[in-house]
Amino acid sequence: MKKAILLLVCNLFAMAVFAQTNMAYPHCNCTETISKDDVYQLKCGEILIEEGRYIDQKRSGEWISRNTAGNIIIKANYTEGVLDGAYEQFHFKGKPKLVARFQNGLQEGKWTYFNDKGRVIKEGSFAGGQPIGIWTSYDKSGKRVVAQYDFDSKQVKVSEGAERYFNKGGIARDDASGEWMVLHFPHRNIKSDVEPFAGYLIAGDLFLDYTSIPLIFMNTYAHYEFIAELKVSNGIVTVASIQEKASSEAFDANAPSFPFIVQTNSPNKLSRVQPSEESLKLLKDRLQEMLALTGPWITNGYEGVIKVQIPFVLNEIHKF
Image (cartoon, rainbow, N blue to C red; front, side):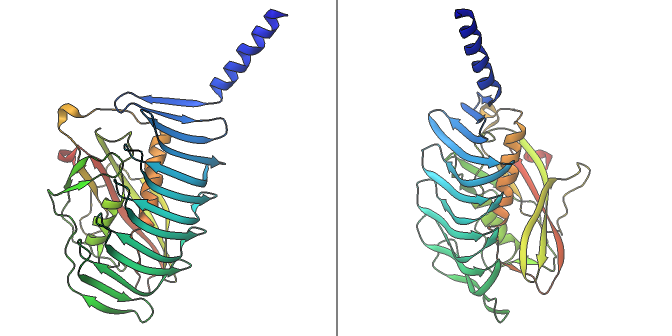
């Protein structure tokens, strides 16, 4: 009888082990776990960095991302894999960075972007994914209007030649780790029928600023070349897909792009790691999510698909 009970306990323990997937990353003291209930968790040290649930391999319900200080930096809601409900981002120290909303994957209501001093740097409204009314973009300090567009009348209200938020060789703080990054930008002379409000360069700066590096990738060598396909229909721009592009395809300076190319540390403090498939999926999901934040888009009556290059490069600058 005792042998039978012992065998049953061993079998139950084995089932529990095999029902859960664990991946350890010693370089960042992180452990990635997917439970038998498809709950994803990333724990670094004693802090639960990322938590959310999959249903049928699609994100569902509330997903929370925290930084190394334990502060929430992203709070998002999903239904069947698409953003649905309140969406918030926060700066490293906890101040609001973005207050937004989605409805069934489409942007909805008032959207407000903030700098780390709490001043508004971009604001406007959506209805069913369609930008409406007047959108305004401010300089980095939030004190001066640099661009304004009326999406109802399709008229430029203000165009001051917006200053870049970041310059090549400048620095920015990563909200997930709190570390400072040196920024690199390739030469770009983008020509496209469809462009984000205030232009690709300014939108690209915000894309970089609002994309926090998943901690598994921080202070590692990484080089991924992604292509995102954006569907344009009746003035609404949605992210159709994001995939790695063929290695033989060179970066096109004239095509739409949002580069994320940064140096995070000196070589003696970097690691080479092999991320899990789930970590790569987390990265792609984050980039796709950030693309939904780059708008609004001025479509100029275009209908179809545009491709956007996203080179995601950490510490392998010489290879770009």
